[in-house]
Image (tube, rainbow, N blue to C red; front, top):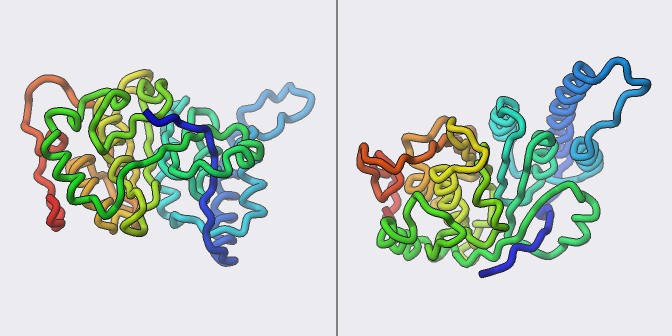
Length: 295
């Protein structure tokens, strides 16, 4: 069992002044929303206004000074934000991948619980000192993009065993299971899961097979304080083969709410233990329609 180290980290990206202005403008728009809500609800009898919550002020300072390219478009960011805004507090948000949007997600959900999971363990101490209110853990993903075919074949063989949709991932031997997170995370009812990692830009990178599979299992086995309305799962870069194949198999077409640019939005509900319609490969009611040869 691998240990999960605590490490907030932003991936390096190329700079661009025009994109930087877009990010800053977008974040300021969100900030004004928070400020309006804060001012409208604070105690008017207080002698002086309270400072902004740490996650919000931290993110404001970062985006006002950072020269970084966002990984998501403004429309994609707004799609996630609209769900977080409607989430009943406290909202449980799990994010796979630490990107330029990480502090934004943390600030937009500052009244709830936000946890990040990423593949890179270096730079933990330095970034943790800068953003001590960000909770993140590193996972050593054993998958590779080049192994997609064999991983899908193994999943099909084990769909009624180690890779079944209803299980405790902590004890799973499925190759696609993320099972080295802190124990408490498997008992949380995650309201929103954002998958923007691990990296999948080359055959030797981990790919997002395990994060998409694990998100599908977490949503269907949802427990803890989570409600019964389903888990919102966002998958970025849906045009790539790994993301396309794995969302078809583990999140399912019938659960797709919308696609915004390269972001897929799924709502996956808890799966009952009784009978009912037969699931394809244990996860979906509908047969996957992906053109990939792996399905």
